[in-house]
Length: 299
Image 1 (cartoon, one colour):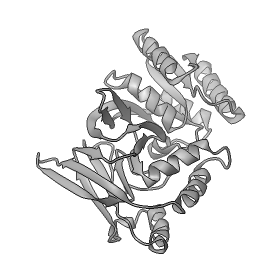
Image 2 (spheres, one colour; image 1 turned 120 degrees about the horizontal axis):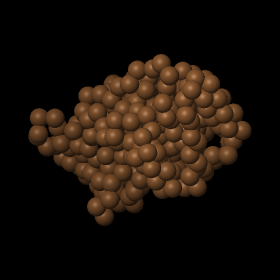
Image 3 (cartoon, one colour; image 1 turned 60 degrees about the vertical axis):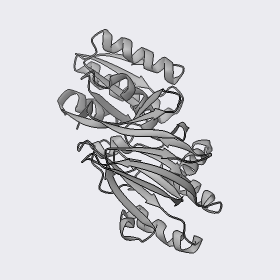
Image 4 (spheres, one colour; image 1 turned 45 degrees about the vertical axis):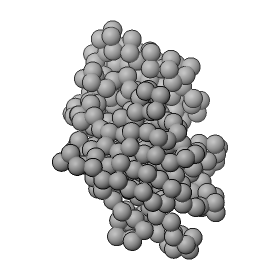
């Protein structure tokens, strides 16, 4: 068995190095040929992964967070080569939802050796310039995208707490802005949404930001995306909404609406979308779903 182990090109932490080493050691102890890939950039990492797949890799372990998983997903989509995350990033939403534990290299190694392979959907982003990108968890636009941007620039604290601090800082600047959304439903019908929104989030999975269930009913295996819209309200009321967001019960709040869609065209001026915690481009964007596009290993 041949395994490629991709290391986050931007990370240099000791925790990642230790977890990666333990994972590689466990795999090699069981006779698995394990090659560590460490590109200097996202594009270089993608190239290294594609070469590994062409060379016959049986599986890919991804040591990083959701952003690194997204890099790997773009290289592995539709190849049938399964991905196993080793969660050592700031946000590890895909890994956590699959049953992995943070910085647990041995658990990831056991999954590669004994786990089951299943297929999950991927979200696809189509930009105005004709280029495309994929994502595994949630695409954020509006307030939550600004939170992602600030969290990415912060160096402390680690993990989910970083998103919480970033959220509180950005909350002071909160305001709605005009969005135009064209929703494509599963039955082929269209719906248009023209209103001021605080945020619009499209979930291929339930959570983002280290476990925040912004799309609490989303499934990665239904061939659809879950759309969560939040309309403006007074800051005090929105502040009271935050605990419900963390519990996943915000769908019952009047300012929040949720829909399940096949695709969405998103338009707004001056808004940059984030997916899996990384910027993917300014609106307008069209976002749809690729059913069963990525093979993953579950522990």
